[in-house]
Image 1 (cartoon, rainbow, N blue to C red):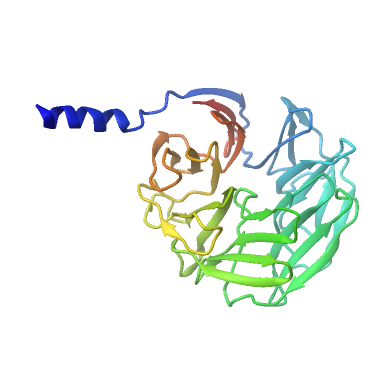
Image 2 (tube, helix red, strand yellow):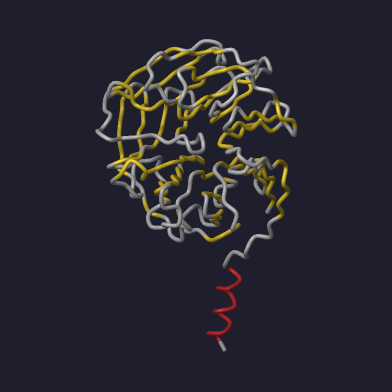
Length: 317
């Protein structure tokens, strides 16, 4: 009897499967959405392929057709800043005006992150065997280029969800890479450091795709986008600010985006499904069969998800 009592206690300690409520906000075949953001007034922004721009339930007209828009941000004056990948002009406003032009045809912008209303950074693919960043200190009106040595042969960054970088504005920039040796990279007070990540690597399609932070904890999601069902070594976490890393258990496959809802509850997603962790990313279990490209936290029990087919979803636990 005492063993049955102990078993009952242990079962009560296990997290129950989340009761999930899903609302569909938008669907548009032929569109792939990879950028999600909030405005100061709580409006939802989205950006995607074929010049798709969406603001709080209304699709905006972007005057340059066929652009692959990967991220979106509202500036302090209320205007939008839109990141275009694979384009010599990387940054547009919502009117289509080019804010920053890079003449190198190899230029590819991956991610944009603002630490405050004025300080922001864009992570770009390596150029001329160097790390390549764009910085702004005036809310995105003007940008300057910063290059950094230390790139490794075959190293790559991924624009799958606009979330492979974290910038806190106190001269601390963190980002993750893929390729032969996936890494957690950090620039802190002018000093560059690198930590090997225990996720899939060895080819240009494998590695770390998304980085999220909550306090001293970092979580990385990735894998191989050419084999989205492969769940081996796709999620890892650090509890000491990125100094050491451990693999997570229970991944459902390649994951392109990860977010924290609370210190213990985390969500990740990819084409093959969406997972949840109740124990600070140590292990994961399926949440939704439906998969997405990008996630955005709304509250401790709410988030948005967007992906292929022009899908934008509101999800509540």
